[in-house]
Amino acid sequence: MAIGALLFVIFVRRAGLAEVAAGVASVGWGFLLVLALSGFRFAMRALAWTLCVEPPGRLTFREALVATVAGDALGNVTPLGLLVSEPAKVALVTRRLPASGALAALAVENLFYSLSVAIVLAAGLIALVARLGTGTSWWIAGGGVVGGLALVVLTLHTVLWRRLSFAGRTLAKLPARWRAGWIGTGLGWLQRLEARMHAAYPRTKAGLGPIALLDALFHVAALAETYVVLALVTGSSPSWLDAFLFESVNRMIMVAFKFVPLRVGVDEAGTGLFADLLQFGTATGVTMAIVRKARMLSWLAIGLPIVLGRGLSAARGDASATPSERAAEPARTVIAIMARSPSDSGSIKTRLASAIPDPRVRADLYAAFVADMVRTCRAIDGVALRLAYTPDGGAEGFDAVGVRPDELLAQRGADLGARERALFEDLLSAGFDRIVIVGSDLPTLPTRALEEAVASLAPAGSAVIGPSDDGGYYLLGLAIADPNVVPDLFSGVRWSTSFALADTLSAAQRVGIDVVQVESWHDVDEAGDLERLRRELVEAPTAAPATRAALRKIE
Image (cartoon, rainbow, N blue to C red; front, top):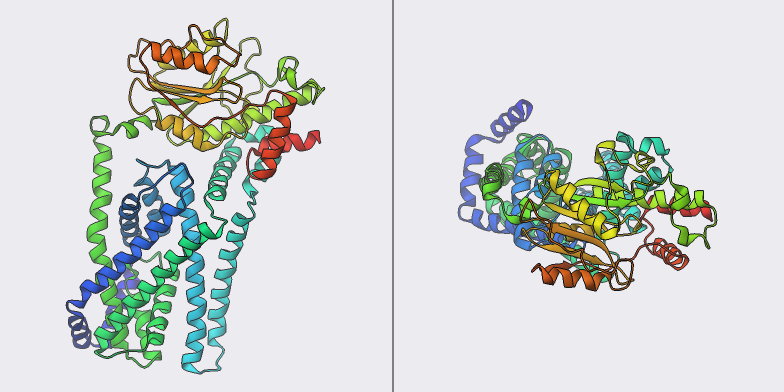
């Protein structure tokens, strides 16, 4: 920062303080047009972000715009740049969208924006050579930098286009003893982010076209802004080529010096030297940089209060929190997987015996189901995980699928209904009041189904259910209103029949609870389900990495 301030002073003095002041004054009311064009650019980035959100998630334009302005402001005043601005944007929209979904969508949007910047820089370099008519080799170094940037961006796009999952493949090959440690945890987080980005990445003309158009409009507005400033500062009508060259250099300075708060000094030095190169004079370049800085400060005055205001409101605690915010509290919301120990090979997935005769192989496949379910549940932000195991199977083997000892609890009860009721009671006693229980043999269950289930439990006294294809349900959730009473959704239910879902809905109606239904899904119980699972994994190459690896061994 000190070096930047020194550069600022040096180049203002080199340009002449009087000339710079006169140039700034010449902008006058035209500065409002500069602000309008920069605001339009924010709007284009925000709108592109909303288009990258994976359905059924939804991010409104207003929320995205507010987060974009505030995050950009925070990134501009700190030396951490993107490391601060992008997480801040995500944090500012988590009232509407889970952080994992917002981050994946933002990462995809940033990739498209980065590709557009690489194109602008490459075009700018070609235009500069044409403008100067020089055969010197200095621009070759610049071409190497721009080419390297373009190669990196294109490689990342190729990875997403082809749905390559490096973290998922590494995790699937990881020894079981490492999966429960920090390596497995980190790779699991990366795999979930990869999966979210693969889902958010558009692969059709209908999806790619609008994002490409919005990025193009962003750069058109940026070019128009640079043209306006250059015209006002010089008092003449510059060529659009010169405006494009200045904008390309401005973009390069932003990429190279994002870590410098407000680009103090480096913007004035870089633009001043470039203006000299184009024979506009140092004063023109320095003045343009100062006008840009004034524009940035204007948006800072809008963005930073948003960040501070949201931070203060979060600090006020439960009394002012919205229902959806309260639903995301990690100490009160839990997803519990009902499972049998993978070590109990004699009792696992017996209906798959016709397709997989070896009980040990069936147990390994079931362990992979549980591992993928654990990974899916951990992808839900702000939610605790528990695994409820059958007492007869014991608690052995769950460490290998990524479950800690403190996350285990025993099921209790004579039948499925009694065990579910007891599980709700035990989790309620543990301090949770928003509880979702889910089966363990749903390896391809999408994260969005669980996110929707958790979000549906915002009002106290509400319930959510996930229908299964066989007439039962794979998920049941309750937001407990009375800490001493679990609503009776379990009496009169014909368990393990095609009537289980209908009977449960009737029970909910009987006790006066409205039930939200999330999307239907299917478990893997029989040989036909196994074939369906194989087809799903072909269609979704990044889904269920542990299950995919286990099936590969069977083949």
